[in-house]
Length: 223
Image (cartoon, rainbow, N blue to C red; front, side, top):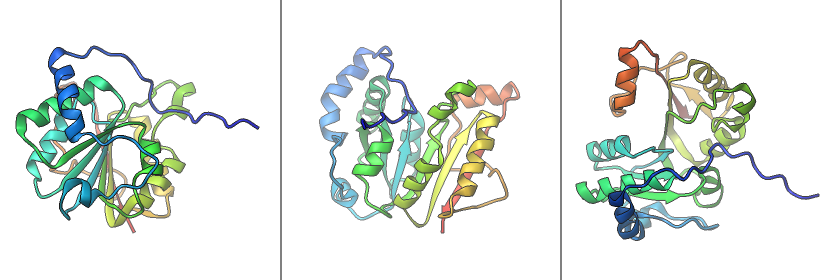
């Protein structure tokens, strides 16, 4: 029987890429990008040092990613996204700030986890504002699903954490249920966590909070 194509949590959109983003993409991707391959990678070798390693899945235009990396130069950050304008934007910011503790993989995060990241290689993972796919018929496309969380948990070191943030209450409830059902993880609080100091407020989030919109942070730890 033919294999069914996996359900993607994203749709590749062309999107507008600025000249500056395109220039950064062409010039800096060979330096800061890691090509996808069906082969395990050694993060210490890639970054050239032994230090805490953190994964960010879906970084948008990269402002939060850069802010966190700047505040924690002792850590290394691997950022995964599929959209070229966002990758170009993050590369442009890396070029402007001179950060050396950031690397990018432009590929499906599920396949990266399966093929490239060895077990227990991550000290933490950030998934900030994943696409909520609000229509009920699209919920199957949501990134936070039991199989994905099991796979991701296997890549966390014991004591490492998974931090998810969303501004959709119904999705937050689903995420809480999925993470609570994963036997490798334990909630660091009861239900939802206060926003950790390392996660900066985005402009979009600040605007939403002023309008009374909620944001839910979930922080679970690998047992």
